[in-house]
Length: 202
Ligand code: GDP
Image (tube, rainbow, N blue to C red; front, side):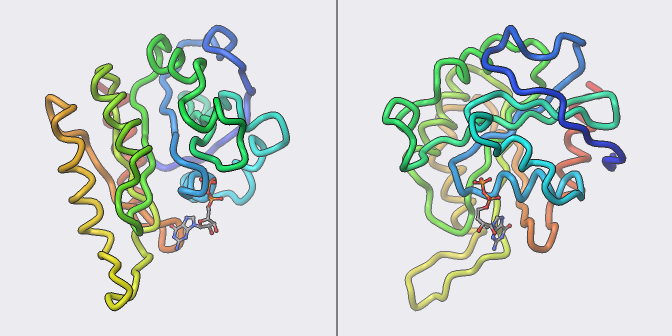
């Protein structure tokens, strides 16, 4: 399930302009600063690949990376970014929703959640939107290596993860799969790749 080849293919402004070869794909999405670029780079074991999509003007696009010449990792715009225009900050851009609802080759959305902090309202809203629209989702908890000092009132990542799952369960018929990760220790890296391989083979 390892990645031997990764190549940036294109940035698309809407679902129609995305690659049309029918290869299966997995979309990575999460709040800005959640650790999406770090995870993407840890998955492909190559520094700076994800940076291609961080070029000015590309961050608000659907960015396709072809993996092992047979499937795609898709980098979607981060949400909740404080300096983004209000309409981008408060809601997924229309094209992102359209992509989720209409991209037929989308196998699963990987929603990234920072496990080092308590659940954020915006993350709960996006998870519940995906659940209510029955879009296949995998929860990827990031920064699981980060532990706040107990005296600062911080909970360990395991507890934040459990709290998050409890808060969204009502929106899902079956609990979504979830993986705990760290781009610092590479925890969860193989688990993500194996999970993607299993989903592709269904
Ligand atoms: P993005 O905005 O979602 O692409 O987030 P980045 O990948 O740029 O990461 C945002 C910040 O979080 C950076 O300072 C990273 O060094 C840090 N970070 C990302 N992943 C991890 C992780 O797994 N553990 C820790 N401790 N820090 C992380």
